[in-house]
Amino acid sequence: MSAELLLDARGVSKHFGGLKAVSDVHLQVHRGEIVSVIGPNGAGKTTLFNLLTGQLAPTGGDVCFLGETVNRLPPHRRARMGMGRTFQIAKPLIALNALENVMIGAFLHDASLSRARDKAMAVLDRVGMAHLAARKAGELTLSERRRLEVARALALEPKMVLLDEVMAGLNQAEVAREIELLRGLHAEGLTFLIIEHNLKVVRAFSDRVIVLDRGQLIAEGSADDILNSPKVIAAYLGAGHMGSGTELPVTETKEAHR
Ligand SMILES: Nc1ncnc2c1ncn2[C@@H]1O[C@H](COP(=O)(O)OP(=O)(O)OP(=O)(O)O)[C@@H](O)[C@H]1O
Ligand SMILES: [Mg+2]
Image 1 (cartoon, rainbow, N blue to C red):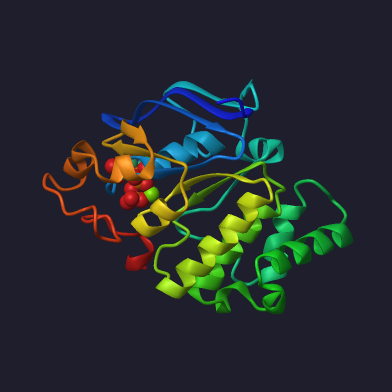
Image 2 (cartoon, rainbow, N blue to C red):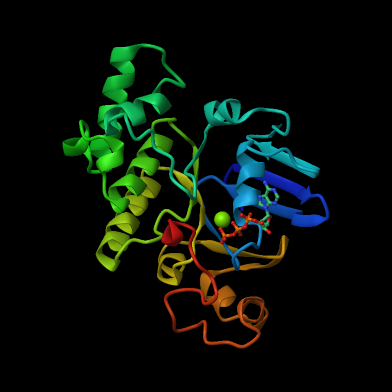
């Protein structure tokens, strides 16, 4: 592929004591790609994201972004380089309104209050939430909170956005709207790495899929190849009825238990 290499994870690992949460994972993402990460609960998907964006330091391996090794850079430095992300368990500042939440991201590049406000407003408008700017984050619905997470990531002016289950708990209409938003952002030049349990989303919105199982990358390919792969089905079930469903079986989302 000739597109610019944005992210290059070279054999990254994260061990928590004896638990190998992520084991020697190699992953490349090029500009303009949409790559999905799937795998059963506890497979290491979120831990991998934390290694990529700097919430965790790797036990082994290197994370390179834009050709630079970023292992030692804290999350805000990686964000400034162009890594935006959302968190699986959204943590908006509930006492602040939607606009203020997005402004926090905008401040990363610009300390001016008025410019950060303008930038945040433009981002809220882009995600269809301008009318909710003054709403306290704690009063937003689940789907609005998820969108706010995306807006917070966008306010960082990222080159690449890592989304950790931003569709979890949304109904079909909300998922469709979310895909439309992400497609639009992709058309505008954004690159995506997404963790997603909803197979419809994976099929509709991935150039490439990688599968993690017990910390290891066990398969990589097109959505169709991956979702029909006996090895992948076995990783989830040991027997397969994965192809026709819309949810990966035996997986559950953390949001559902809140
Ligand atoms: N900070 C931590 N300390 C110890 N163990 C951890 C820590 N974070 C994650 N783990 C463990 O690492 C493994 C991978 O967890 P991770 O959250 O990355 O999985 P996941 O694929 O994102 O799962 P899910 O689909 O449920 O979100 C799990 O066994 C988890 O309990
Ligand atoms: Mg997770």
